[in-house]
Length: 185
Image 1 (cartoon, rainbow, N blue to C red):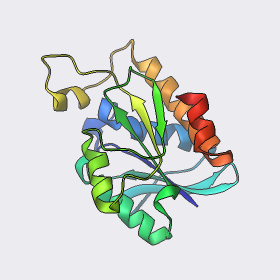
Image 2 (cartoon, one colour; image 1 turned 135 degrees about the vertical axis):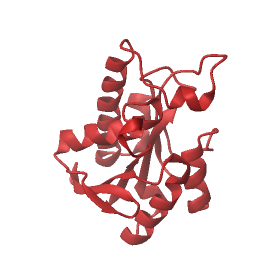
Image 3 (cartoon, helix red, strand yellow; image 1 turned 30 degrees about the vertical axis):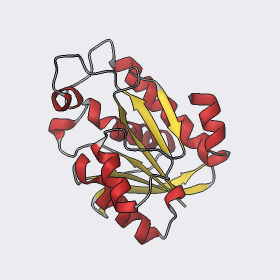
Image 4 (cartoon, rainbow, N blue to C red; image 1 turned 90 degrees about the vertical axis):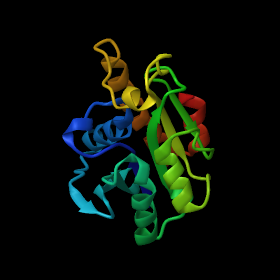
């Protein structure tokens, strides 16, 4: 079993923001594989299904970004998975809008959701898919930027990146993370 976690903030006010790209990818996966993500469990909205012959849990933590690790820890403990069985999908301001970067492990890079997960898991070793949301303008506050919405020009790029990230997850399940890195990085 694999747990696919998209990071974001709950409530309508955060829908469509840069920080909620992880949720957008979970929605894309949910639509593509007809997996309803509508059960409240483990401090998350979850859905169960099968992708590429592998049982999966799709999860969107409802703890707000900075506490995402609480939900991920509960999911891993309940489903008795290893850290390597979790794929975390989240926004990255160091990548151009819509670009993907897949890694098997790594630091938080200043991302508070990833800091929380690393803290709760006690390791940096878990697969992740970073989705580029673009660099913060020089004089803008970081929180205002990541909680802001995409421009009309950026919206098609983000929709396309959500589909690509969905394809990357499928390739990771069908083959391995190296194959996904080679194709999508």
